[in-house]
Image (tube, rainbow, N blue to C red):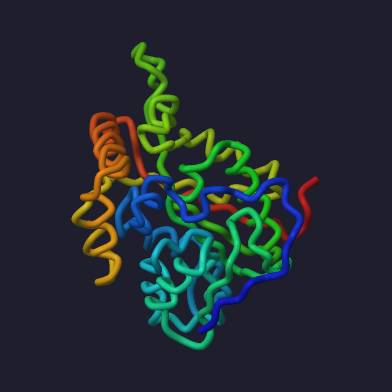
Length: 271
């Protein structure tokens, strides 16, 4: 295993949020799964991850998803990590000579065109603005080989908050004090895809699982457990943000779902 720093690439603006869900990144919690492990498995299946796959993970967190693939005879697994510290954490969870990390961002990976047969990411797009989402999808289209699939495990709004005269749920969750989440409804997720040169294969909804600190700690390695606990106990803004986000997500759980959005790079270019 190795960490590779790819050649610099032109970008209209590299994403500031490289590790997925903003609150998870600030707290050092790695991956927080909106639909739990069941939706992670659905994401991997939907992307066609299996024997001989060339997998690129755009939001590897601290390596939990990559660790699920240790027993799979992949051609390669590449985790795109925002910092050397994240890369080191991921390398500690993945096994095999064909597994590697690179330093980059989800919108500017530095990987060659057509590098991947499958691209995966968990709780990445939900934490980004619409331009950020679109930039990641364009990069996904570039690094996918023709016919390759990508799957994103994200958060979806299933009810229209305007219908009950409530504050728009997306605007509520987008407030920085509440984690800066920007989920879309199913149609919104699907509408993002075509401008990036991709086509929708499907969108699979699952039960929304509110973020659970105990689950995050179980998913972490020994050193990360101490890091998470320290950041939440020390004075500062992480713990209040965590409580605020957890409260809002729990309060609106009936209006939320997890979603696996599955897209494909067409074999022939879209007109």
